[in-house]
Image (cartoon, rainbow, N blue to C red; front, side, top):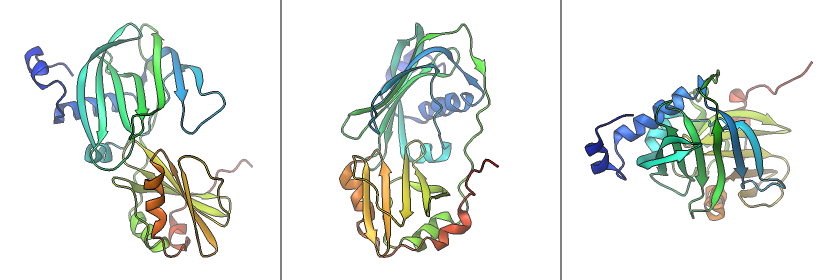
Length: 255
């Protein structure tokens, strides 16, 4: 992450490959090490009765490096103090569409995240987590990388829901049972959406779009503007989840 100061000053605020590589390296290292101490975690979407809680470390972020590189512009925008330590501040902005923007603060010595925040396309804060105090050194952890998306899943989704228009940048990466229906995980590398095909509708709420298609309902849930969610479902002509069945992971059981 260290570069000559003159070069840094000249390029500050301009996205380039080195910034992406720095963020990728920090997020990869966070799978084996973590800064611990005292953290404050605030989640404003989806809404909840108590949005802020205390934690011993930052929540883990599910990141898919190839999609992150494809869909986000990463820019180092300065150095700030977080929990009494120097941290590089990076902004991660979607190249297309209305997905959430992120800011990540990375410790200059440990090369680990010390804080992050997520904001909607309109700038509204939806999630923030920040360490306010840290222990003298990182702790060891084991966080496996997310599994690769099954080959053929996108084509199967197209057959199951013809006319579906995925929001820009998002791609399906997994399927699992949900009651009598199926749930498809979508991601752009950092943001996540949930697509559900079910025999029943879902309660209306911010960040939720649903549409009846024949005898089934299709929902799309996530931190996107309501018109974007609705537009994704508007053209769906039929809902036949059978093509997705072979990709569905078995439900967890507790014998």
